[in-house]
Image (cartoon, rainbow, N blue to C red):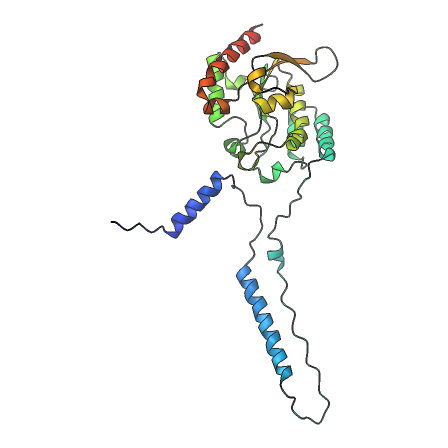
Length: 299
């Protein structure tokens, strides 16, 4: 029986980093690390010095002609250095509340162009998701596109590239568009949440509500002919639907961004490409929805 090959320290470190990456831990938030061993050694030395001073005071005092002089107090233990004290994140952690939502609405409303909206979003610090995300994934595509897709949140590939729908689900979306004679460069794509949640978890309802004014303003500035929500979370946030995606997919409704005439957009919901990658058998439903989308664009 052959003995198992020992794992080197380098292989163990690489395996640990790979596990961190799969778990979504791909960013360090701390400053310089604290040397706990050095702090413990310094504290132990201080205690030993204090103990030896007490033992010396406990010995019989030698006779002297003058009065006894008091012993100096033992030195206090060394305080943690400024470098060690700053090892914890110093960024301000935002609290999702009505104030953050109101701030997001005000910033989004004041943007007159997509460039101004992007700048306002990148300057917005009212959502905790931006603390762990690498980039702000705003949107991609023509500023006056006739067709606009809205997903849920960026994934790992999108967080690295800073562009929505560039991973496996984005590649599938490109092939779906090609199947009905459309190119990716001709459509606008974005998400309800512009920052990747840690570990690719779903955004919380509070996080979605905070970011919603920015995507709503983006839809208003683009004013596409057709708006498509990809997946149930996007449909619930944008269209206010309370039903599941299987019930609302393929149905047509109106998305209103104002009260005046002409401030409505034809809207529908489709299965998210990420769901189709997990459930390939449902691509037949997506194909029906794509044919309906093609017919609607031809009207």
